[in-house]
Image (tube, rainbow over all chains, first blue to last red; front, side, top):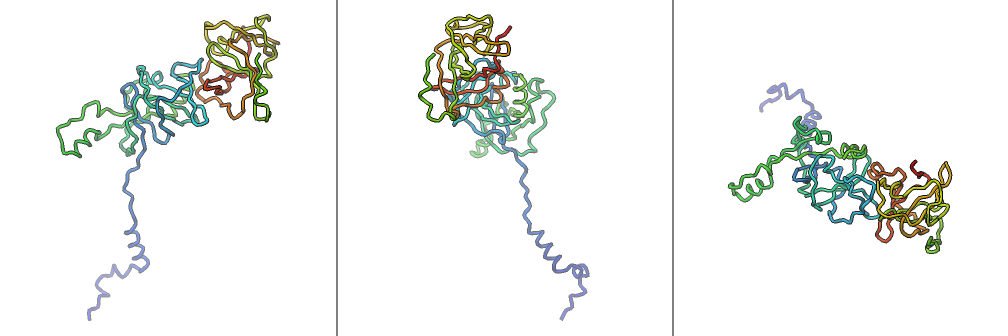
Length: 200
Length: 134
């Protein structure tokens, strides 16, 4: 019979409870998912923007009847009657120094800074979860008109075209510069605060 | 003044008495207790057009056809309005508070809320907050 008691003095120092605890730790699940932020991606005047999904309550059809309210700046289209409530409808072109557009587009019902309003956009591109690490600080090169309302910049690593190309095995399609354009993540609190203060 | 108040008097606490009129092409209203008189012409020394006062326009698009008499700290004055002047009772549930951004940006600080009348937007103004411009 072999005596193993002297084989490894290190082993003898670990109690059963400690050994079980060690095993238990080994079995614990480690969450390796990156923290993500939901973004609502859209375009106004051919420029790509995003708003945090947490601030967008609802995405509405752009052809909702809008009641014109005289005595307001042109950036306020009017109000909509939405399920028993009246909501303002604003456009961001004046605030962000963008050219006016004729698109009916869609309406994003946004809540921020204790204010709720619909914002008209030209096109809704996507609603997606983006790793927080992919969001970069706004560069100094942003226009001074836009900068106060930008919380981050997102440069997609793969575009829709690339994903389709990968899936089909067709590598001939090269994503255009337009598709790779950075998306500007807007700060809804800053937008509403500025609007309330008379800007735009 | 047309009075359709009899239509909605079954629960007086659930309704608010409003005087409806037009400001240019826009439907507007003031709480009835602020309106102390109605005339077809401006007869008082202090008067102003509703389009200029309530919507801050430089020019009036429609000449006033009726003059409401209101009161402020300096006494009675007349507000020139267009269209038919109607006394009505609107259910409180049909009154909408002003959205924050509209309140912040509207030309008139007297704008308090809105209601819909036959799919037409009606702007609700506070008669106590109105005074003719000097």
